Image (tube, rainbow over all chains, first blue to last red; front, side):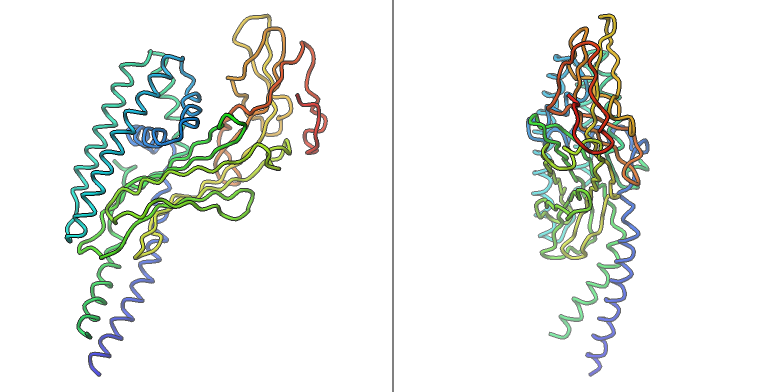
Length: 161
Length: 228
């Protein structure tokens, strides 16, 4: 009888806590609402490369066209996207495999190492791209990614970096 | 058995309380493209990771999902793969809006496009959502005109004065003539979009002889005209 009472009390606690938590989740929703100029450039480049590199070829070509680069610079950007996409998916697949095993064993994966590897990949891609594009191309690319920030939404914590 | 239930309940209560705390770097990015066949394609990606509390919940998974709502219709949902709770969700989806869509063929009519993206946990439900992205889509009629054979050639809106979307500068133009073209224009922001218009070329254009302008008389009446 005593055990039943304890279980009932705990069940009520769980229901109550879940309701509070659900409200917290509702309040947490604006966490994805940071957009525009508050997005750091480095995050914008990551989202830009990750998104475009995984688009179907015809849509990626249209997106590259929207940067309004010369034919040579467009080809350079397309090549960079291909190289980034391959490495990004490889790093992500490897991390997801590691995380799945870690969770299975009751451990946390090395998420910091994954974030560092992605940040390094973004940095290398930007540097390599800037070194390969014409001066006009670099300007057009930087301006384009900046203008795309209105279509990006990130978490408050990442915006505060 | 009772002790087992008790342990599960305690664990659940603790995990639920902790759930609000775990950090994430989820992000949503949307692009608007012309697929080369006159269709507008909205592509959305949701990427990022969260670090859930220990101990892990056996069998729990995360999934990213996104939807577009076209003119207040039903949400068209797409889902990513189910991945572990600390995995990168990496969802990419595209929605194709045919150039024959009523909204886009009914010139001068703005269409509402709402975009939603979130990440769901099989254990807690939706725990991250990007702010709803409200926007407007317009099929604008724009014209490029050469002046004195000297570039750059200014572009002027003819039938789209109401929203004044900027012309798409990539539309080809021949000298001493007008090129009239339709463009997909999109803008985001509250109340159907307040931001700047971004235009993509549509698949209809025509070089017009000098002095020949499109007939915009019926543009605001939502009926056809000699726009091209």
